[in-house]
Length: 397
Image: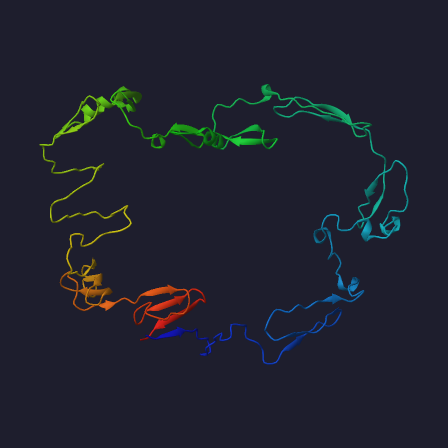
């Protein structure tokens, strides 16, 4: 038994393979260094490992010639990036601010509107500011600009000033106070409807409606009620009992009106056709030899399928799946099956019938192994993946 390791071929038709377990290195190492205003020590690099190249700026290497006008502004500096520690005492005075030449008690700095200059202007005015409530608010009062102490202004809600609305839409909003966030917010009728919706109650565009599909399933008794729209009384909501429903659904082979409201099946009445769904709570045993179904979707909860379940003794049989390809190009029937003559999974085909063919192609088995393969982990032509080194091998003999 022999194996060959699978290696990758590069774009230039050469093989790159790690035979030492370490990174490949340059035959002659190369030095890296930085010149100009930035200096560094020379670092040698040959590929055997990481290197650190430290760079330092020379003194006075960055001045006004290296910085364009407007290159450093608010967006280039973090908040509080320049503080007392970054400036000498009296570094910025009146002379450094264009147009600001002298101070006067009681005056404030204003813009001159010329070239970004500033100057001292007039004192603050003590004009009164009156706060007038808008729609839905009452007047809050007034105060002057120059206050000796804090001033509190109170606004009150004026519901009488709001316009009455009788037609509402899902995107209309209602103001409310969020207790958990301690903040005022607004809520749309659609969001309010979603908040109020619960079991069997749904919301669409702010309108609540009963959603019977969300109701829970329970065991029912004959006196339990159903609710439905009664078309005989112009769509009024009516109710009827389970016993009433049993009587209504009774038909050939079925007897309604049982004591518990159920429908009994007449066992002597043969059922030849079921047009609707059929649910069987217990096991289903079919004694016939053939089951024919036109089902397009087959769902099976079990995680395995047992073929040849009645096979006993020492003689085994080819077993698998057959696909009907109709009149497509090539053989009509394709198979995936266990071929006893090859003792393995095989593929094959037939054009005339669905029997397993006498000639087939065996599928090669791929396996995982913690380490290089050393025995019969797979058959000839099979692949073995070494999980410990991320390497692939193929069995050649």
